[in-house]
Amino acid sequence: MKKTIILFFCISFLFSCDSDRKILINGVTYVDLNVRANPDPSFDGNIIDKLVPGDIVQIVSFNDKVGRNGVYWCEIKLDRPANYDGKELNYAWVAYSVKDLPFVVDNDSWEKIKRMYEMEHEQEVNEILLGSKTWVTQAIYDYVYYDNLKDIKYYYNENRDNQLQQKENPTSRYELEQPSHSVDFTTEDTYPKYCRIRITSSSVNREETALYAVSFNQSPRNIHFFRQDKRTNRGSFVKEFQFGNSFDSSIKSIQRKPKSSRVYYEDYYGYKTRLNLNYDAIRIRPHNSRKRYIVYNPVNYTSDNMNEAYFRVVEEY
Image 1 (tube, rainbow, N blue to C red):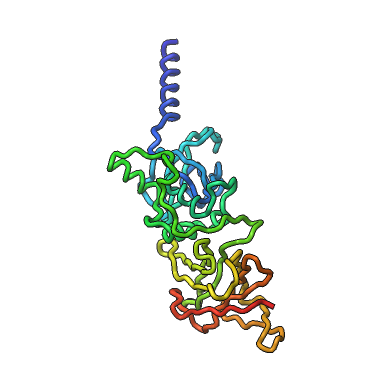
Image 2: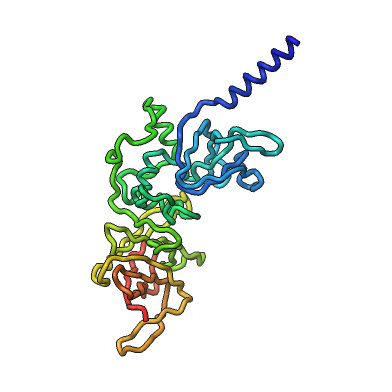
């Protein structure tokens, strides 16, 4: 009986130790993430939960070794136990970054992301946050804020080295840096302020680089282009084009028109004429107007930095 009691207390002690592991730091996801029973992304059967932008993760450990394809993993405490392979799990694994592209950031960074997407008073997340556009958010963040977006491991190391206490919430909303630009809040059911587009020439191996065109509120008649670096996975700003003299009002939405699509405009003589496209084009809808405009690049060759590019604007027929 005595051995049974001792064994019971030992098991209870081990269980309590496992369920009360120290939380190193709280992070916030700004992208859809899979929660896995083990850090093995090649096996979809080990996915036990999914996270959405804005979810808080309590990190109990960081994996020191980089995983396959440059994935960095952290172990998190689950909100509730999960069953996997006949076992009850209280902890699981999340990819907090891939190469240099962060997936989990600190709370202040998430609050700044909400500001740049005008999400402070919205129940949903901006459409740009959904799907595989993680690097676009990071690129916009780096462009509109003084400091670059960093992953949660950076903030953990900084807090540990400086013995700083992590701020769960900003004391005042005015303590956070204001973005130099912001993107109008948009969902799938409203008018998009961004589009994925192929606007440059193909590379030597015939691969075409797809950029993202984004329209900001503070420069509503301009379009900014961003691209992703395959080596680091991070996104960066490429070029801004101004269309201030082309429209009567601000840009309400932008939409990709593929190179293969039929796009028509009214020519000099008033006839309906098909527009010959070397690349994808952008359809622009201004505010306070029923007109639609087509923005296209007529140059035969345009490098990734878009130095050779210039745009023409025609009214769509």
